[in-house]
Every structure is written in C-alpha cells, then in structure tokens.
Amino acid sequence: MEIVKPRDHIRFLLNGEEVRLADVAPDETLLDYLRLRRSLRGTKEGCAEGDCGACTVLVGRLSAGKLVYEGVNACIRFLGSLDGTHVVTIEHLAPVEGQLHPVQQAMVDLHGSQCGFCTPGFVMSLYALWMREPEPSDAAIEKALQGNLCRCTGYEAIMRAARAISSYGDVVKDPLAQERNLVATRLAAMKDGTRVEIGEGGKRLIVPANVDDFAAVLDEEPKATVVAGSTDVGLWVTKFMREIAPALFIGNLDGLCAMSEEDGVITIGAGVTYTEAFALLAERIPALGPLIDRIGGEQVRNMGTIGGNIANGSPIGDTPPPLIALGATVVLRKGSERRSLPLEDFFIAYGKQDRNPGEFVESVEVTVPADDVHFAVYKISKRRDEDITSTLGAFHLTLSGAGMVEDIRIAYGGMAATPRRAKAVEAALLGKPWSEETVEAALDAYEQDFTPLTDMRASAQYRALAARNLLTRFYLETTGTKAPIQVGRHEVAA
Image (tube, rainbow, N blue to C red; front, side, top):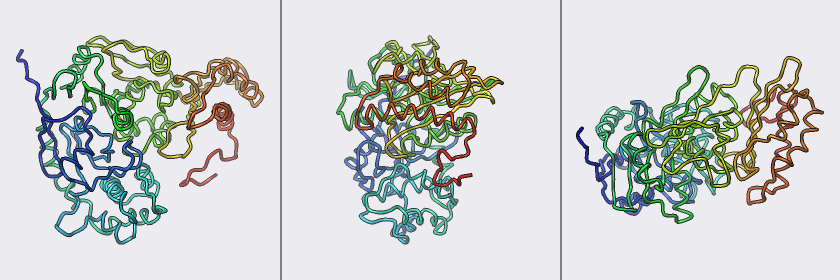
C-alpha cells in the first residue's frame, strides 16, 4: 500500500481568499492571526475566554455534504482547527465599496450600537441567524445573542435591528448564499484525506486524516493534547498559559461527528457539537433541549462537543449528570481496541477518569426513556444564560401502577469532585410511595451522599439546600401541581 506523505500546511478560505499556512503554532488562536498577521481588526478581543462575543466570526464547514456557517469565538478557536473551512470576518460583509450589509444598516438605522466595541460580534451573530431564519422570533434572536455581551445598551435597540434585517435585503441575494455551491466545491477539494503535521518534536500540530489515523497517532503520542471544540483547552492557553503541544485537532473528523438512533438507543459520536445534538436530543429526550440551550452561548455550543464535556471530567460539566441518570454507556478506544463501561464508572476522582494512556472517548450511548418514565434536569447558575453551573440535578423515575418508586436514579454535578449519583437518597426513596412524606424523609440522606465545597459560584450551604430543593421540585412537577414551577420569558403560565 502506498504511504501518503503528511501535508505540512493547513489550508482554508479567509473571506474570498485561499490561505495556506505552514508556520502555525499549536496554540495560535484565530483571533491573533486575524488581528496581528492579517490586520483584520474588526474582530475584537474582549474577554479572551469565549464569554463576551466581541470576537465572533463565522466558520463555514461541510457537514454531511452540506455547507453550514456558524458563529464561533475566535479568541479560543485555534488556527490548527480550521483546515478545510471558510472563515468569514466582518470585513467581508459589505458587497459594494461604501455600502453596508443589511445587518449593518439595520444596526445603524435602529441605533443598535453605542461605543461600538462589541458591535462587530453582534453583527456576525445576527448574520448567522439571518441566514438560518430571515424572519426570526424574539426567542430565536435572544438565543442567537446569548453569547454576545454589550456593556452600553439595554439590548432593545439591537432586538429592533434584528427584527428589521430582512426589510433591508433579501437573504437569497446575500453573497454567502449566492456563492454557497462554489465555496462548498472549494472546501470539498481541500479534503484530500491526508494527515497534517506542522512543526517538530514536542512543538507539533497534527490534524489526523480520519478516526483510525487519530487512534494511531494518540497511541504513539499518549501525552498529546486532544482538541475538539477548544471551549476548555482555549482557556488553558489564554488564561492559564499552559503548553498544549503536541496538539491533535479532531474537530472535523467525520467518523466522530455521527449521531444515530437504533432500537431506542441514541449513539452520539464524541465530536458531535451541542448544536448538532440539539434537534435529536430535544425531540427524543425533551428535558435535554432546555439544558443544551443554557450551555454557554451559541458560539460555545457551535464549538463544544458532548464527548469533550465527558472526557474533561469536570465536576461541573453539564452533560454527565443527565447522561448518568439516563444510564448512559461510554465507548473508549485505544488503537483498534474498544471497551464500554457505564458512564458513572468513568469518573474516578477529581481530574482522574478511567481512561488508559492513548485511549479516547469515541462515543456515548444513551437509551431513550420509556413513556412511563419521569425524567427531568435542573441547572442552577448565577445568571440564567451563558453561565457555568453552580449545581445541576438530573432525575430518572419509574413508578409502579400503585404509585410506588419502582426505580430511581439521581445524579448531580457541582456537589462533589466528580459528577455522581445520590445513592443514599435513591435508597431512601426506592420501594416507597411517591409522596410528599417520602420525599421529605429522604432529604436528610443528602448528607450521606455529598459534602459540597464553597467557591466563587456558590457556598456549600447554598449547594446543599439547592440540591434538596431540586428533588422537591421534581416531586411537585411529577405529581401535577397546578402552580407554575417556572415561567420562561416567552411562555405563558397555564
């Protein structure tokens, strides 16, 4: 078999130009490249941690043969992850010299900008939304702007501008819409099926050719940093100045980005982003939809992956607790060998998972709850949108015909060094009537399960009380209380 020599450069489209780069450091961000090497300074640095959205650009990529444009945070997106993509900055929007794009003109006319620092990020997020939904609802606009912060305005002017964009232009006449087939063809031509290797020794940047190639490289380089969405690794670099080389960029590996359902079991590839997972999970396991909507902002959800959230092993990761409550299984791979284990057994201690050197999370399998199962997820955070969890509870309950607790699984994040089951609480409920008295009696068992810590997000006392209250809330919701537990901004209480 012919041995294909690795490519020594990455290539991508930047606005209307093809870029080939052989001098790329593993930790070089897209933001630094745009501002320092290309003088495209419309993209701003605000927080350098993917929180404020001032650095938002669009990245177009081929997904299942379709060209998809998504807003991303350039401050934590590494240059090495862009091979075979189309990067669009705000400088590319105006179709004619001196003429503003419909999104820009709407922002000007409806006074959506004050100091202007955050404005390019807002424009790019609204541009991505406008291409998806030319006539968006207020809820869709607010969701699209979760990851964009403005320190000057009350946002209403920006909302008015978002509603008015289509009155300034037709989305089908937009350059990105008209050039879509051409761009897709150019990106497809870049996917040559070869590995990319840049640099030498411990300073290398590697983009594997496929999943098998990734497995082989990681087997040889077990200490390499695996970078999928970079929503965590990006902060390792920008905030903690950590060395990540050699770095393996796996965000665009088709073999890790598949998601399917068979016989009631959903298989989620480790590279599936929150955005990609949303439609199927929200339909089949409805409680997961609102949770995903609260993971970061839209830019973070477009980059971050469920597999990465699991592999990092953070005690405040949002997806492990509900997946544990659902009885999920994680599939690990080393070379060509695979093994499966219950997700709850994957987390051993803080910063330690049941993963051998050279082994990686390949997928997670979760069973869709039966119709008679009550399943709910509740996230507690300081602000509702785009905030890190203080504590998160997930509940999976099966009742007998007589109203007895036949089976129950309860899992929490933010209450211990790892995502963990509340087994003492479960034992206090199992086999008992699902009643207020039973729930009240089980609350004391939380002290056996958890000894939470105090940190900047919440005190130990607050976490302990909130965890108990979430069980009470779950009981009230499953017993048909008429009082609204929560009313969203765009919902009407019954």
